[in-house]
Amino acid sequence: MIRDSFTNGDVTYIVLNLAGEQTSVASRNVVEDIRDDRHILTDQLSGQNDYLAVAGFAAYNADTLNSIAENLPTALAFIFIATSILIFIQVRSVIIPIKAIIMNILSVSASFGMLVWVFQWGYGDVLLNFTAQPIDAGNPVIMFCIVFGLSMDYEVLMLSRIHEEWERTGDNTLAVANGLQKTGGLITGAAAIMVVVFGSFGLSSVIILKQIGLGLALAILIDATLIRALVVPATMRLMGKWNWWTPSFLMPRKNNKEVTESE
Image (cartoon, rainbow, N blue to C red; front, side):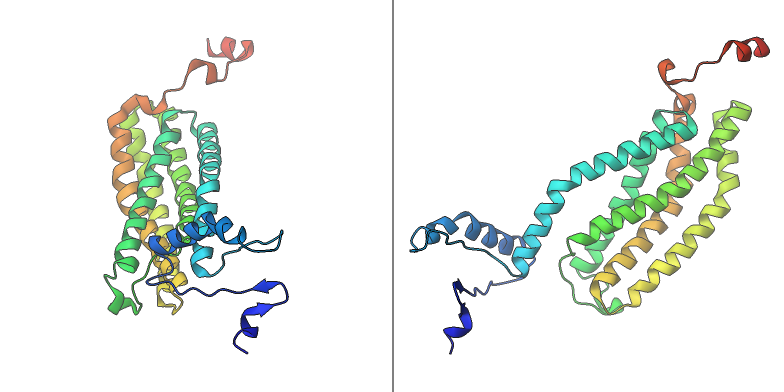
């Protein structure tokens, strides 16, 4: 009976118990070692079509990480290039899109650090009622996409107002101050709503939802307070007119009628 429970036709099941967490680096290394050396076992079997497949949560975790690592560069390149083009069309600047991406990366990275500090290292496990464990591999990807999209949304709103003031006054310092004043209340209110909504997921008993919810709430809080209210205006103030630099070949040319009217 025991033997029959591990065989089914031409399929044989071999069960291995790994010591430690199945999401640990050591567990993933065991999976990769078995896969790398499986030809040693299959070569000793009599069948010509013998194949050794490795399954289980450790294998699933390893496959997930490999898939993310393989496709992440392409996804990031697409996001950054598309974002840069759209912001350039909006504000006609080469520097500002690059700065906007860097600012978003700062806020997302800070939220990732807090996520590890809380959920993986266990600071706050009693308060939030969870057991410290490694972060699920898919959570950072989900958080990055959501936070990057939301934060870039009101980043464009703020930059549009600053750009309008820059075109109206030609004074970078005044444009930054007026643009921040006009959008500050709206951004703060929108961020407060998102923090409350995402933070409510922290009450969930499902650890994945708890991680995503609190991670998003922290990211939005950091982005709306430190990044948008302090770092972005400060960097734009220090960079001065370089904020609006654009190569001449990227600037739209005026037609003859527009030139005549301007003269």
